[in-house]
Image (cartoon, rainbow, N blue to C red; front, side, top):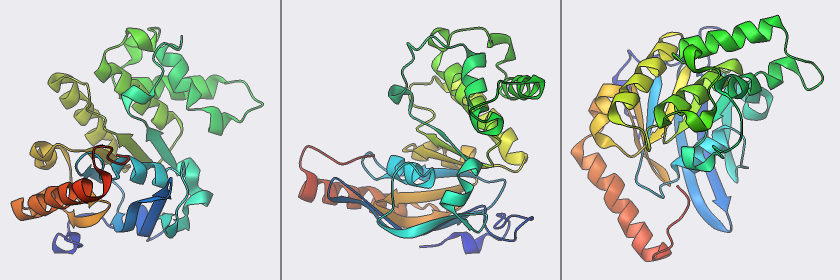
Length: 267
């Protein structure tokens, strides 16, 4: 159910191409013989902060991985500025859940952000002055320049997330995907991260964040995609009604209990 047409203030297309920044069309994903996503469709324009809302096991992480090109589609297509995803992967940067990162790896904040320059630099070149300037600018943009020499293992959860956002910026991507960005992060650090992301949104980037926190939708996001294997509805946070939330979570519980028992399925 597309609720966004009721709010013409939401930017719908890229000024350079006239196409949506991101278009997900009838996407289905199957993993391990199980259908995780089916008939998923929505669009997002440039300069929009999108909350992908759903219960655990609803397919949020799977959706972000599909947009990032990390898993194949069974059906449908994903367009970035009107072009097929594989042609435009350099425009998409993915920030994984914190628990999926090996924080013991001996890398500084500077090192992690410089990793984001791999595609612009190329595999056979060493970073030059331009790349170093780019890394500094990204760290400054997220408020982490003063922590550049710290190992990521020494940083707080919120600081680590900022470093990974800076790495995404260093990739020169126009679409940022963050998987449960606020998990394990204290409230003050969450608000700091939201402030950084809103600044990036105001600069024209399209940002999608997987979340299960209904209470912060209106304060943090311009748009919400309500997901439970399929899109139950999408539009502004104000259009996410209690009735829709009830449908979103009751449908999840019914499916979970009838088909998955205690095992669940990927988030």
